[in-house]
Structure formats: C-alpha cells, structure tokens
Amino acid sequence: MSNRPASAQHLRDLAVLRRVKDRIDREYAQPLDVEALARGANMSAGHLSREFRAAYGESPYSYLMTRRIERSMSLLRRGDLSVTEVCFAVGCSSLGTFSTRFSELVGMSPSVYRSEAARATAGMPSCVSKQVTRPIRNREAPAGQPQLA
Image (tube, rainbow, N blue to C red; front, side):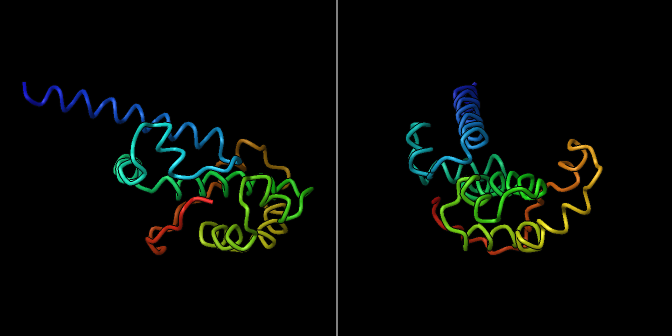
C-alpha cells in the first residue's frame, strides 16, 4: 500500500502537466516562458521542464515551438501573409529564430514552404492538408534548447 500515495501524487502531477500543455496549445501566440508556466503549475522551472519532458518526450520550449511552427505552416499555406507577419502572428519575437526553427522542423525555409505548399495543397480539404503537412520533430536535432522567448 505504500505505492498508493506516490501513485496519487503522480496522477496529480500528470494532471498539472496536462494543464500546462493545454495552456501552451491555447496561448502559443502569447509571450510564454518556462518560469511563467511553472508558476502557474506551482512548480520550479527545472522541475516542470524535467517532468514535462518525461511525460511528453520533449521540453516545454520544444512543444511550444512545434505548436507555433504548426500554426505558421497553416498561415503560410493561405498565402495572404508575409513570412514576417506569420512569425509575429504565432508569437515569435525573432524572425531569425523563427526561420531557423521552421527549417529544422519542416526541412525548408518558411518562404520556400509558402510557395511550394500553396501549390502542393491546392484543392485539398483543409482537414487533410493539416494532417499531411503536420511537422514531425527531427529527433537527431541538437538537444540543447534555448529559453522561451
């Protein structure tokens, strides 16, 4: 029976991590950082980062950037916004960081993606194009993650 309290605490921690993940999903375009997310979860930033990685396989920063890049892909496919406008619309404050991360996740620059994806998904229902164009994290990418912007 000694495992019961630890198990209950683990379930509470997972519920907190799910709320953090949901917050990132909802507020990806807002200025988020690990410290603010940790405060909202009543955890230290380091503990949140370790627990989030253990639960979801990536750091909160990586998850946030994946959501931002995923949304930017959709905006770029529309074709009515510039790369710079898309960068700021998804919550990135640096065009250079946005372009670098986009290229790492998608395999091409945002401007190339904008021109190629518009042609490739023309006439495709949005629900299908979203699924086939979803970014897949490159597991060979360097592990070091910068702080949230």
